[in-house]
Length: 202
Length: 202
DNA sequence: GCATGTATTAACCAAATGGTTTAACTTTGT
DNA sequence: ACAAAGTTAAACCATTTGGTTAATACATGC
Image 1 (spheres, each protein chain N blue to C red):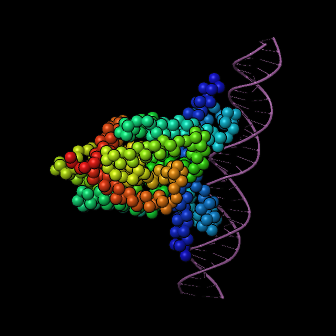
Image 2: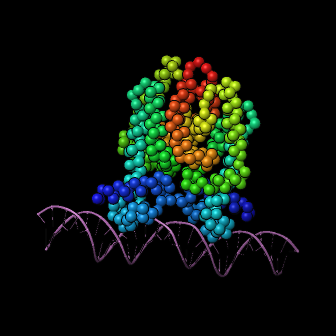
Image 3: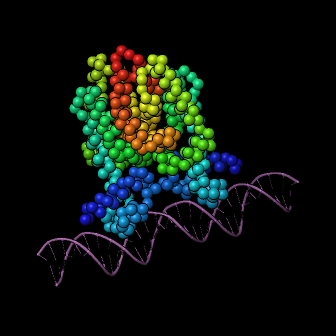
């Protein structure tokens, strides 16, 4: 029972914090939706700040390994790229609020990310090895020359950006959620095609 | 004198609202930085909400015409793409907070965006005509086939995303602001090359 | 120099918000 | 059945925060 309730609160809190950020989130609303009062919130989590930290910690613990795992995957170059694109799109479809939340909150307080990266003894190695593989592919003449950071930005930009732009996209085109998700699923293939042509050696 | 003071307040308010969002912004802080007290804020702008609306309105009036102008520019295809990429990068370098602000804050209350789009009798036309030009290019066999929304996402994703990812990028790579801006300036060319190869007909 | 509109401050206020205490109620192990 | 531990609610509190008022200073045109 206790665990259920705690998890329920955390779920609701996550929704609020990710969608609205720390300041716009009201503990009272979280309590209401969880069917409890603020005293219970205090009982379980002591303070809004602590609750928030728990949410950040869990969110990053959930998401960083997936992303880092894909980037560091021990695969041939194109399989690896495909895994990255696929992992990002799949993960973000499940938690659409994550990219903006991470980038927004982290544009203000980076400590959270830094702490969590350290906790997980984060592998730069993942990115490093991906960059090395890119360079090896270029050296071998199997893909065109391009500075690695730029290629990383290109891949992630095409993959992640549409999710962040969704509100604007939907507002301007009046597209439904289903339309949007369908489009995002198409993108896996579209992006791979695009990348392969872009990196093709003439 | 009056105008100067008002403009000063607006400048400071913009900084706060764009960086921290509505809820995390304190009117007291704005007042302090402007060297006035809250009564003056009330005197000039009546309320936080009104001040916020003024900031949104000005920000969008500044930025939407630039973006829409580039997208709707009456140019040959590749010149147009180059203008888009260039305009976005230049504009965002000047106001780095804009992308996240628009996508985060405005994703919650879209009314602001919608109202401003209407005020400016926003030209879907711009995007429509760009899409038509893309289709014409494909028809003529001058660029590869790709669904227009995907190409738009690809262009804007590569262009805009890196700015939003800057905090993460800097945290992970420990890059300085200058390094980052230099990288972004390089990107104009990199993105154009990338696009040209990606859309090249075999 | 004075009347009139403008600018500014100090003090104050009400609502919102996060947090806490106390006492009662429920569950659980023995 | 009962003590101990865990859970819950009602009432309460302190602080923060946006907003307001009323009196005063300042500038400006006549």
